[in-house]
Length: 96
Image 1 (cartoon, rainbow, N blue to C red):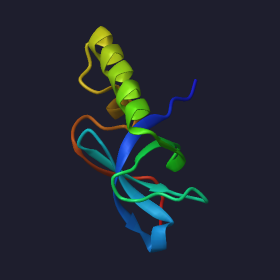
Image 2: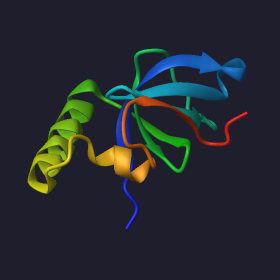
Image 3: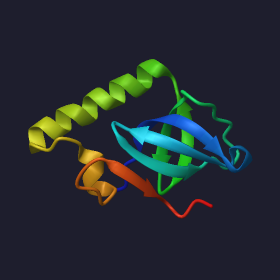
Image 4: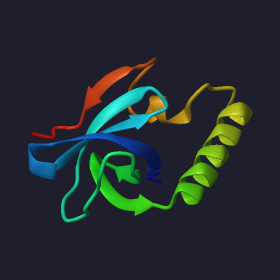
């Protein structure tokens, strides 16, 4: 099963083709494709690509669900495991 996580756009790169996204302290670069994003947008990312821009309330609801799952699994942040991270830092997904 594949899971996409919500994050917040920190900055645009390469003329808006790539954005830097924060996932609670973990940063990744993601391709924007044909989805227009701006700094501060809440976005859904999967496999290094922006899938969609989320409404703030939807992003907050998803984050709450993932935090509940993390508590159940006794993990701080469930997405760090999927991103291959054991802590905070910066990761890039082959974005130019």
